[in-house]
Amino acid sequence: MVFSSYLFLFFFLPAALLGYYAVPRKWKHLVLTLFSYLFYGWANPYFCLLMLFNTTVDYTNGRMMEKFPAKKKLFVTLSVITDLAILGFFKYFNFGVENYNALMSAIGAESWQYEAIFRIVLPLGISFYTFQSMSYVIDVYRGDAKVVRNFIDYACYVSMFPQLVAGPIIRFQEVADQLQNRTHTLEKFTRGITFFMLGMGKKILLANPCGKIADTTFNAGVVETLDAWYGAVAYAFQIYFDFSGYSDMAIGLGLMLGFVFAKNFDSPYKSLSITEFWRKWHISLSTWLKDYLYIPLGGNRKGEVRTYINLALVMLLGGLWHGASWNFLIWGGIHGGYLAFERSQGKESIYSKLPKFCQLVITFFIVLVAWVFFRADTLPDAWRYLGCMFGWAANPGAGTVVRGLIYAPWYVLNFILAGVVIWGLPQSWDFTRTLNKKKIAWCIFVFLLALLALTTQSYNPFIYFIF
Image (cartoon, rainbow, N blue to C red; front, side):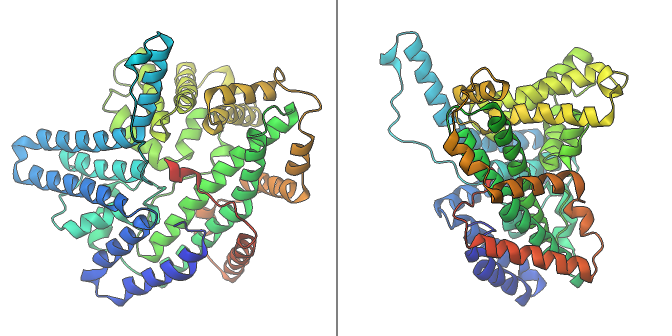
C-alpha cells in the first residue's frame, strides 16, 4: 500500500485517523500499532512476523539491560547481532550467492557453485525499521534513552505506518518523550495536512513524470549525449521529489497523529560541496551513520588518515545499506572519496574559493555522476550510460523513438518545473511553518491536481520502498 493511492487516501487513512481519535489516550498506541501492522502486511502478511520478532528481541534486551546493568554490553551485542543478521540475510543472501558462483565460474570450479533452491524476497522497509530498532537498544546502552516498559509503546514506535517502509529513520531519543506525552492540536493537524498535500504533489506531479524520462533513457541502450544528460538530470529530480515527497507525507501524517518528526531534506541540490550535500540529503540516515558508525569508529579523533578511512568506510557501508549491488558500493565510494578529499583540502581550498554558482554546479555534477551508478540496473549498464553522457559510447542518430517520448511537451514542462521548484521555491518545511488562507488554498489546489493526474498514471512506484 502506498500513500499516493486511492486505497490509502480514501479508505485506510480515514479509518486509521477515526480509530485513533475515537479511543482514549491509553488505547491510542494499540490502535496505531494495529493499523500499522495492517498497512505493512497488506502486501505480504508474513513480513509482519519478521518485524514482530525484531521488535520483541530489541524490547526484551532493553528490559534486560535495565534489570541486569552489569551485563548491558552482552544484551546490546545480542540485539545488534540479531538485527544485523536478519538484515544481512534478507538483503544480501542473493547477492552473496551470485558473487560466489561468479567467482567459482571464473576460476573453473563450477562444481563448487551453490545451487540455491529458493530466492530471498526482501521485506519492505526492513532497512528502515531495523535501524530504528537498533537506535533504541544502543541509546539505552549509552544512557541516552530510558527503557520502555510497555511493549505496545515500543511496538508502536517501531511499526508506525507514516515512516515505516521508506523513512525517515526516527531515532528513539527523538520521540521518546512524545510517546509518553504529546499534544493533538488543530494547528498540528492543519500543518500535517498541508505537508501531506505538498508531498503528494511532489510525488505525482514531479517525481513520476521525471521518472518516465529517466526510465526511458536508462532502458534505451545507447542514446545520444544530450539525451543521456537529460535522463540523468531527470533521475536526479525524480529521486529527490520521490523521496522528499514521501518524507513530507510521512512528516505530515505524523503531525496528524500528534508526533513531530525531524526534517529529512534541506534543499540538498543547493549544496556547495559534497559535505554540505550530506548535511541536507536524507538527514535521518546521514546522522544515524554519523552517530552510530562514524563516531564509534573513531570519527576524526584518531588522526587525519584514520579520519579519511572512516569517512570512506561509512559511505561504502551507507551505499551497501541501500542495496546488495556493486553499483551501490561504487556510489557510496564516490561520495566517501569526495568527503575525504574535501576534508583534506580544508576551508582554504581552491574549490571553496570558487564563485558559489561554480561550487553548486561542480557539486551537482558529482552527485549526478554518482546517481548513474545508483540508477543503473547493473555495473555494465552504468558504464554504458556514462559512456553516452561523455560521448565515447553515444551513437549519433540513435534513439529517434526515445527522443520522441522524452521530449514530449508534458515531460519537458514537468522537467523545467522540477528545476524551478528545486532551485527557485521554498521547501515544504519552511512553506508550512506559518499558514494562511492563500497557502492552504494553494496546497489544496496542488493536491487536487495530483489526484486528477493520479487517474491517468499507471507508473507510481516509490524508489525507496526497495531499500
